[in-house]
Image 1 (cartoon, rainbow, N blue to C red):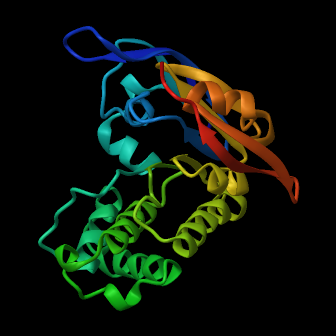
Image 2 (image 1 turned 60 degrees about the horizontal axis):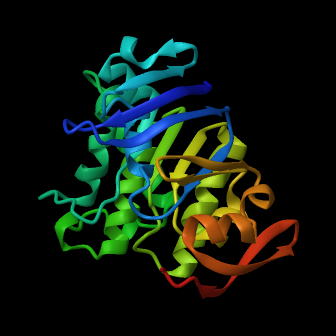
Length: 259
């Protein structure tokens, strides 16, 4: 189920554009990481893909269908969305919170199957011990894993994630990102993830999309995108990029002083 983004722009009522003229083709079964500084429109971009935000101009095609012609219920079956979860609050147990992700598939008599899927995903993410805990009692990192579980139980063909590892320690960042990569490789799910960790993105993603000044500044393989020149322009940092097992590894040297 490819996604074709054609020259899209979005802005709020004051007509100030958040993203401007972005085009990109996303292919089945690939892992994409979206990079860029704060405020360049990364979250806005993925919210346009799943119809949370309405485009100002341009077209998004999902499996050759215009998103405007896809109902929200259909969209929920096709695309799972895991928002940045720092402010989420649910007065429910973890099981009930994750079960909410089964809503697009629920029907009379489906509860047993839905709970089996929840159990499977909680085991996969190694958070079964949290099943009966209240969501609001969890740490920020645990919140993040539960929200990821809620997205996975939708069994989507595309998974959009807004900084899914932001509150996790290094080990758990790697574990979660590897799970996402395995979903691509083993189940053919397309994963589009916003990420701030350059080396996590470089290690696992098939393609990177580097955003800057409301547009796509660079795109391609990690080695093509993560260059000292690109990082200097986009992030204002000096860096050394070395090869590690065929993947780039970024070593930050210094930041550029703003004039």
